[in-house]
Length: 80
Ligand code: FES
Image 1 (cartoon, rainbow, N blue to C red):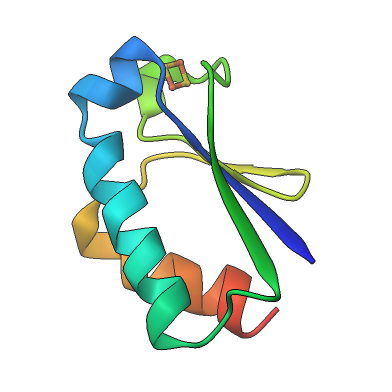
Image 2 (cartoon, protein in one colour):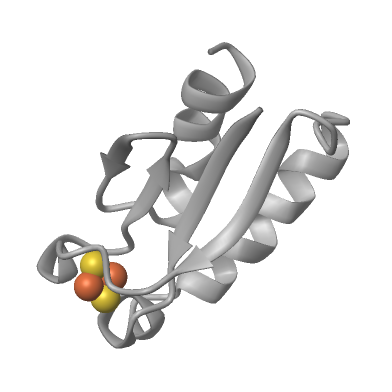
């Protein structure tokens, strides 16, 4: 089971973390990962200036945006 947390702290929120949550939900549904991945929100992960920040298991990934979302999730979630 992989744990994905998406920062919904104020800075990441302003940078569009809700959009990333929507994309993550869609990604999980499209790849039938419901049983393999948990998705949740996180409070500030301490990397506000580099948001949107997400955490996949113990790894913090910064600068997530709609443009690089697919690549990050394919690499870190699908192919991991
Ligand atoms: S608000 Fe997301 S890292 Fe601080």
